[in-house]
Amino acid sequence: MSPRIGLDSTIILKTAADMVNEQGLDAITLASLAKRLSVRSPSLYNHIAGLEDLKKQLAIYGIEQLYTALIQSAIGRSGNEAVHAMGDAYVSFARENPGIYEATLLLPMDPDVQQAGSKIVDLTLKILAHYNLTEDEAIHGVRGIRSILHGFASLEQKGGFGLPLDVNDSLKRLIDSYLVGINKHSGNPM
Image (cartoon, rainbow, N blue to C red):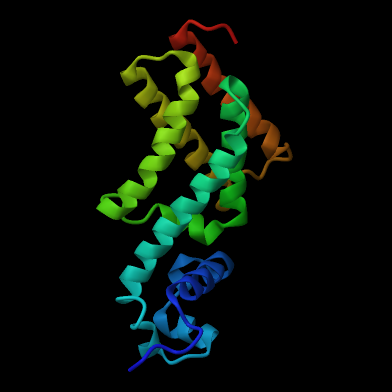
């Protein structure tokens, strides 16, 4: 069976991304995706190997989109300003792309997903290079900021911030606290 004219992997992936952002990652099926694309489910197999393959592609797509948002936020910035910009971009990405953000957490041990994610680690290490950390301290710093940003984004997505305070101010303060520790380890003053 030949592929439908106009249907390609990019269209399938972008349509699936829209669907998971609207309905959540668990809501996507090949049947619902085919219906949205106005094709029969078997037509999708010309472009993807199945639902698990689609979810893997969504994970990689999400990581690549997150990386783009992070690098754009960091351009022309360094030090504390770059860390804050990266933090804001990370949380904004999760807010604007809740299903895709969820997909980025799938398959953490898959080599292709790890390779995509390594670009974010490398970018974060470059941003943290400003602080002259040892190699081990830099890795701890990457883990720390990822944990902070993921925890914040996840709690916010699940409605965990119900008190009447500005969540963006909370994020700023959280990153400021992280930076106190980073600067302490580097010997740099805030």
